[in-house]
Length: 511
Image (cartoon, rainbow, N blue to C red; front, side, top):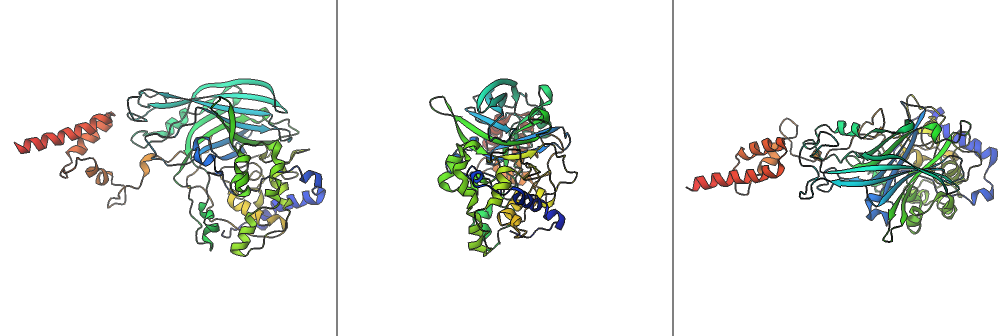
């Protein structure tokens, strides 16, 4: 929770908008009764007891923003499977086949989904007699050496007050970008990523596959709020981990109600098939960190199974949040007075004259005004620093939602000016400039190998002895054989061949 600099004019951006809205209309008691949780300050990785044990179904983040290079479109990104260790083979990271991964859009502010994009996945295995994810270098998504592949279908479901209006399959058997096993297995991963970007009918573009986790923060916040003395800040603890991403780029006119009402609400869910064959919702995510630090343990699993139109049951978690009380207990920073109607207005209704729909029903979801053009130079604190194209008006990949939300939770909009933050201001990898925007995943070969005298990774020094049979000398014969065989893709042969070569030499020496 370190200080961050920003201009005075920008600093007043969100405060001016929100305070003006409060002064203009206030919060009627009847309206407050219908509200739900939404104060947020990070991502929802492993946020609830049940979902933490089933990562394939676990939403980690949702992003929604007007596409910077195609401003007539809106990009929505949903991530799943937290903390993917890049070298986590031989069973690398796939989407679940018994799940429905859904992106919901409310285009009139009534807390009901009007459009639903549903992704379902199938897994294909070429050779079940090997343990390998790939049996040689992979040059394309249809490469014979990519042993385990996935494809997905997309359905566009239109609803009215949760009643089915229509269901249309808009994509069928689209290939998924694989897990990035390593540089030997996937020497040109960018090429594989590009092949997984698919243009659909009507100007929609889709992507599904592995990506670098775009969320950046110091997760040591759970160690008594950064060590109890601010000694544990400044380290991006998600650096080096991947996620599985689903991304859509949609012409804005297809998701907005009209040019006069351009504000949309967006959230994602995962439904899992139960033993009886029915699908049950097991994960939900809109604004970041709602279920992680806003909801107490008794409500976490319930929230993951709930829908925005039923959010009134969680109201007290927002109007009387726990986090400011913890900060006061540990750091002696006074908690703002309750009830926290400032949090209700910003995170559950949207900011008036910015991203609040007319006649809004307060509920927890990302709200994006699609008529606001992308910023030429995005500011990481978004609306709080005068950049109305950023969080909480949607969420861009570069938005520092930890810092922005910490400051709001601690009363920035109530006049308690502060510059709280975790000293992690950007992602460790640069984001792409075109769809799907997320950074390439960290490869499995990037592990902590031995360093040579020139500072570069010396693979031979680490692998030379490891791949020789026990008792063998430091001969490089085996490494020569291994390198040649690996180049040909014959992994099983190279290991056996190395052992046979060593056995023959030992036998010759004995005679």
